[in-house]
Image (cartoon, rainbow, N blue to C red; front, side, top):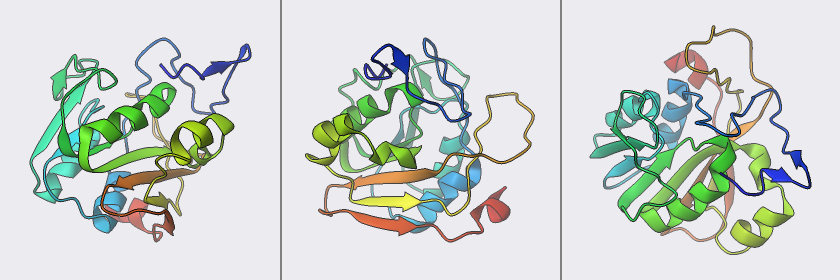
Amino acid sequence: MDMTYKLNGGYKPTIKRFADLDGPDYFPTPAWATWALIDNERFEGGIWESACGNGAMSEVLKETGQQLQSSDLYDRGYGEAGIDFLETSRRADNVITNPPYNAAEGFVRSGLSASRKKLALLLRLAFLEGANRQRTIFSQVPPSRVWVFSERITFYPAGATIRGSGTTAYAWFVWDKDSPGTELKWFKPGYKAKYS
């Protein structure tokens, strides 16, 4: 768990997405959000989806044609269960995942060590904010590209009725070991209609 999640006696705001503070924080990723990434960002070599949940993202990542391994700390019937990404020594060419909300900073640290080429994390756009992240991540290892969604992603807990639209802005944060510097980019609208 992100040790800054409960800071100064209060919790970081979730902005309508509730977080399971002591548990698995599990919200499957809509397929169109993963398609936006792989349509715009090239991945060479194997891919590790390290918080695979029910396989929603992994099923789309198979379409890259790259070798794919999927794992999760919890057993949700997909991939290899019991793998703690925050403690692993496993390596892969690329790591792509939607990390648990309450462990995002830890996934950045572990992902930078675990990936040989690229690390791509689906995070709230507000992840760019914060004095602690500026000191521990962005001043030392800023992302190469931040792909901002033009359409809002709505995350639903597994089994929930799908309705309405999200209120939180999200982006893919990509650390590319062959591309220094940071670019801010936007996905064109239309992915939600095309892949939903």
